[in-house]
Length: 105
Image (tube, rainbow, N blue to C red; front, top):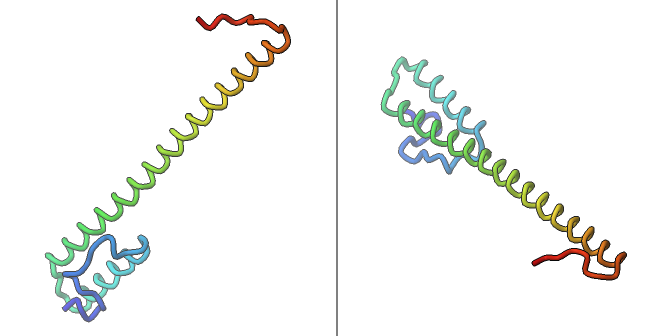
């Protein structure tokens, strides 16, 4: 059946695909084979689409999480930079006046 396409459907797992292109290429091969033989193999197609859907959701979630992490990291860096600038301003003010002009209590 579908093994003539070079695919063993029982071994298809999203982690086996290196990228989306491979996955869609495999799906197109399977479509072409099933259309030529006029046999739809509904269970196999449903299984393949399920894996494709989970793979795409997984990769898009990874991208979204990476972007959120970058945004959080950027906010932390900004906060750290602002805190450093405030400390330097306070330190500079202390050195200019020569006395404790800022009461931290």
